[in-house]
Amino acid sequence: MHFIIGGAYQGKRDCAKSRFGIKEEEIMTCTEDGEIRFDAPCIDRIEEFVLWCVRNGEDPSELFRRNREKWKDSVLICRDLFCGVVPMGAEMRAWREAAGRLCACLASEAETVTRMFCGLETRLK
Image 1 (cartoon, rainbow, N blue to C red):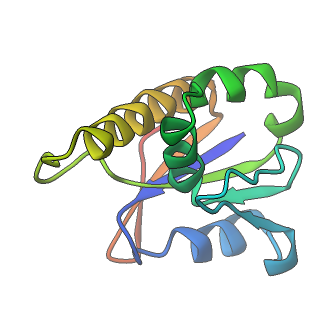
Image 2 (image 1 turned 90 degrees about the horizontal axis):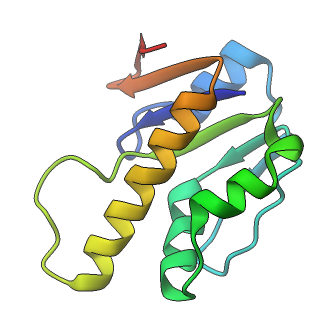
């Protein structure tokens, strides 16, 4: 698995396409409704799935662990929620924490971890 993180609009999706040959139609984009296809070649906006998990009392890290065989060869993309001002609301703080825990879990499993900033790739792993 290859893991790409970075802030909003930093080039994460373009990186997945150019670096790993992912086609637009192969990208599963998560939304706040909890839909996710763990077997997609590329899963984008994982943070939206995490928000759904927080709102529904699910542990996103556990759901990813249980489905590891499905995503182990995929490119996973998550927006960085962990930097900057800590949110005032409890739900948003829980979202930030759950996303951070999931990203740490995914980074430990990943073959490569890339951070995108201003369209520039920094290989972390």
